[in-house]
Image (cartoon, rainbow, N blue to C red):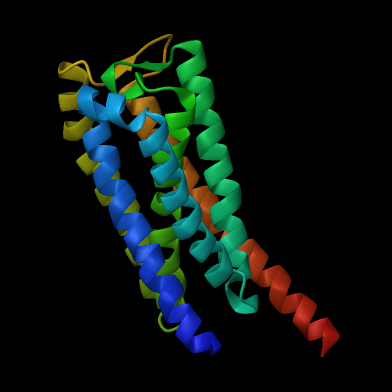
Length: 205
């Protein structure tokens, strides 16, 4: 099979992963029945296969030379986000119905969602930056601002319903600012890695 064809397959799987996990994340937060169902060995295995398939597609698509800075930016930022999730739930910063599932189930759903949350906007920025760099930066900044503002009423509703519970000084503001910081880290890493890649190629030319 040709590389262009494989890339199209990978993009389809990436889209399936991003949309599927986003929908599942929104349902899992508040649906105790779904949490119990996904905790069974059968559904945990299905979820694991889905994550492996779609995230492997992300990795293979991103490993292409020109996309590799994007991939590493996604990986590093996602690892930081997942580490904070595990820390926040273990020390009581985050609680409530949304964080009732086991850490392994949270990783399979929320952890994967973190990856897509970083990967998709950053891929959009990269695509646009190749054509209109200034527009790309403004669009990415606008997306981060819009999402942060939209998160306020959403998290207020989750907090009021007991789906989210903040503790030990961790607040909604902290949560939103962390998201903004990680969006900035992802973009910064992408730009730095692209510069490093370009300089390496120039030296090798």
